[in-house]
Length: 320
Image (tube, rainbow, N blue to C red):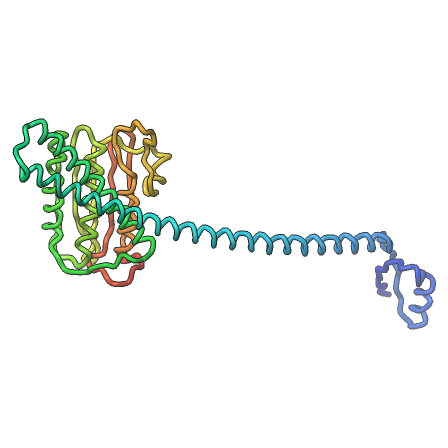
């Protein structure tokens, strides 16, 4: 049996089929020449398309490089703006705090009737001035803490303390606010070992903000503070209320600065919207995590997971 090869060629205009057959016969090769349907002009068209694509690719790469430069420039400008905002916030806060301390100091002296007798109406007015001043001072303190957190200038003061005692202090401090609204303030601590090593001041800030927030947005029912331990190295703190709740689409925004669900000037619950932003940043600094579950008109539950032994490494702990 004679084996015949098929050779596929393209017609380049220089050699024809008969000349190639002659060359093959002289070489003693039995082969069948099969011409393809591609002509040189088609190949040229493809080469031109490839060249165009290469040019487009180069132009796109140049455009990407320009866009990257623009993005980097915008990032630098945003960083400068954030730095200026933080600096302005610190300056304004300090400038507000100094005269406010004078107002608070003289209000307390007037309530003690240090400068003379005050009637009931006058005492009531001074009490309102003192209460408003204290609320403003809390807002200023939150702004200062946030600006320091964002500038990484808020150090941790790690010490060993009794967590149950700290919870009781927070509850006793906020009990008058709850009683004024006829709310129950409940505590449930289930710790085999109440001693932890953490930043006592910052943890107190976290608990105070969450419980106070629960009281603010709850008109009837209760606010509960519960502490449990999931492992020997990790504790869970939950603050649950029976308040107005948070609409599902807005839950992702509640930790943003200067944000509240009700943005109107006539909203019932006043405030700068800094409490939860501060809590989130403090929890992160203390190697913890915070989550929230909420249903509209049924209340909210904030859950914090913290290490029992806080280290100087500010990275979130993964020990569960």
